Length: 486
Image 1 (cartoon, helix red, strand yellow):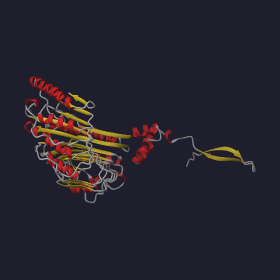
Image 2 (cartoon, helix red, strand yellow):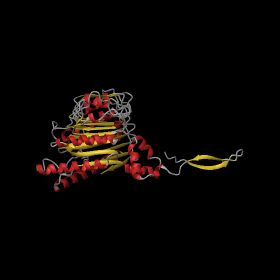
Image 3 (cartoon, one colour):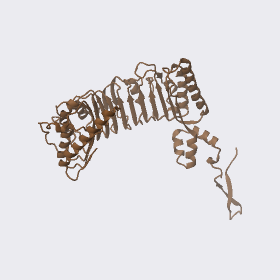
Image 4 (cartoon, one colour):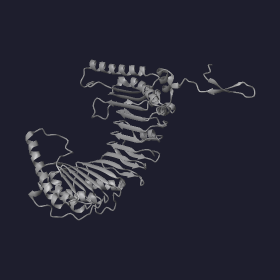
């Protein structure tokens, strides 16, 4: 064995006269080794140690960068069974498989940070997908992304790729996995599966998974910070317990949950899209942002559900599809949004309901006494009655002071009586108001009409509405309030 220790004479022994030798560090350093040898060393290190090595110097960041690969494979545009002949389609698949296998072979025994596959799923891909999962796990990939498209996006009974849990074990080859993103995959873990201990992000879209399967997956995900479930058809109650103490973001979109029960106290952002279901959140929740989109509901039912479920949020974005405006108010509800500071309402309403608008909005604001910023974005269907074509509603709104409201922003303003009446109500009851913005553009409009005549007519109506709003509001606004009409 070669000893690389360097010795040097530093002094002589005064008694015997013999020189004294002290050990010194060798001149050869680890970074002096060839790059290919350094990459081999880095590829053998756990991901945590690789991350630590990057802070040593800029050279080590460079070495770790060239040794850690991000592999992303996306099928060619137009490679689809519906658009190609069978022979051409098979050629397209084989070409994709060969490209991936070639890259995998080149990266053998090297560290892979991300493995990403986006392609239309076909049964002939199963064995290759299994091999790629095995490669990604053995290469200590931090992120595995499989977005597999079905032939027909509208069908839910399509064949899905069965994720190979049998290729995983509870050893060190799973301890590095931090992100899993899957689409059109069957995610059915065995009952003895012990979860992903280092997983931080789990995003499932159109994935075949049950509530029990999800519970098994999350059983040991103590580091999970992001969970997204989009159209996963869970068909049951979603319960997240205190073990997910690091969870900060939760998205649930049309996943057929019958109830949502959240005992995670550090959740920052909650996104929900679907029908109204009971939502129960921990009393000491620190929820900052809630983005809620209820399907076919009244605003009264929606607000009541949120008051009873997540009253402690600070920022709320609420949208109702196919809404029904009712004059019934929430004045009798003793619950309040005691922490709500910013409210954004996305309102698609029929023209014949516009006169009911002020009562609905006031009843919502009464439940948010500490609101500071209010945004309302309108998209209306039908012809609106212009405000100066008649008197405002004979039943005046009850006075309600919005002590903390500083900013009000309305888009989709068309000069309707209900819209103007609500704006005047805000001006008269918001003593701390600093900025009032009225925009005639419909931000929620999902289509563009290319008819020149219609565009000109809309422009003329918008200009008329803007001038009328500026005229009416300027008379009521205090000098300190900045008015912006466009």
